[in-house]
Image 1: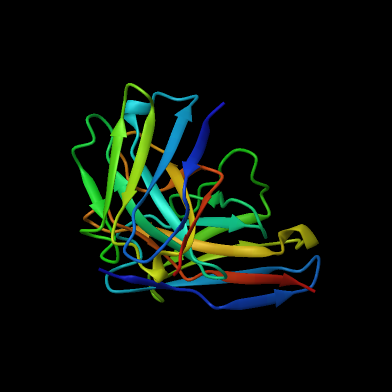
Image 2 (image 1 turned 90 degrees about the vertical axis):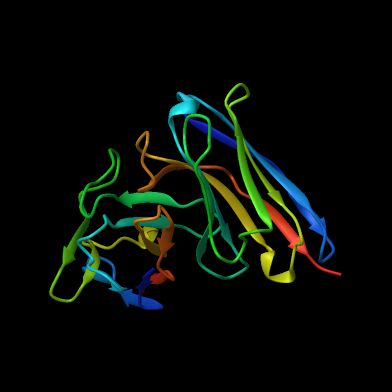
Length: 122
Length: 111
């Protein structure tokens, strides 16, 4: 059974940093790209970042987080992290990690984590 | 880059059929596959349709997807509406630089 279990998150002041983690199981982790998707309170889904399979040398970021967020993976632990710095109030959201359906593809998601809340407020 | 535009909300009665549109601005809707996700209140999104019209195992045949190049849009059609279909629905695609694009979401109310 495929599982994505998220941890991290919490409350932080503007300008602060947080790290989210997504621990996976039930599939050959190294073969699949993983994304982070967020959802601000009462709003829609917004893609944040993706990391390719393999060594994870291919990373992609939404313009809204580029230069502030870093996505990384550890194939020995089957985990993907999202390091968030210079956090802003508009980064407040429920963050999901999500697995892409097909190895080598960035087309669509088939499994999602349970979500972890990030609140940026003074 | 491109945007996907969905109606903010739709409503229909149980047993009826509803169609939710997703219009692409910038480039052809046929250039990249479109997916549809359902998100019930307080729940994680789940895939209803992938690659324009494919249904994952376990998704009822009441849900179908299509694309229309003339209107440059994708559509999700739900037939035989049930109260449990009341949810938010999101279309999603991706661009040539592997950036994921979501539509703004449509709230379906089953009256």
